[in-house]
Image (tube, rainbow, N blue to C red; front, side):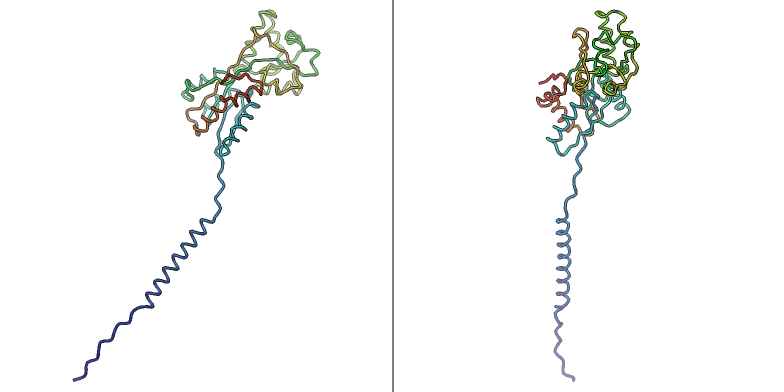
Length: 283
């Protein structure tokens, strides 16, 4: 009978255990490096949000100043303006143009937006006023020195088109002046009109360029063109423009829009409005 051999002990798999541990450490090390590498990557620059404001052309200078003040207080937001006649802006909004805030030179166009369900009438606020003057090219000051001179044959007059607030106001003033300057005064001046412009700033430009002797603009526009002469309109015949502002119901950035409106109505905003030649109304 053969002698029995003692059972052979199974060797401990140290190599396998060491290999598994080493692999785990390697994986964790790679993951750690990956996470660390990601953490060290510089953050991508954040593009500022855009706040879109549709504003009457006569607000160009004033709102550019308000926009600078807003961006200084809210550097994460850039204000983008669309300046044009209030009637043109209202049409663009009705046709689906995206905007956050609308500021017009007359209440009629704002009321149309309210009736169209695009703006909240209860939230619309009057933030400024304006009145009309006649500006005269300096080379024609000897010829056009008074309102009566606008009716002289051969005088070139420029005015904003009908439907544009500045144009409608000017025609109303001409009718009002008939009480003191004669019933035929308005028709005589209108007969001298050589151009009807899409907005009041285009009227101002025509006179500045010498393409017209005189033009009907807002007082704030005249202030922006100090080289032109100014003929005042008697208060009893003038028309006071009232400027409404509102956040559109479909505003992409309602919070920023409210902050912009708040600035316009604040003491700082009203000071900028007064500096621009408009009439402040608040606070």
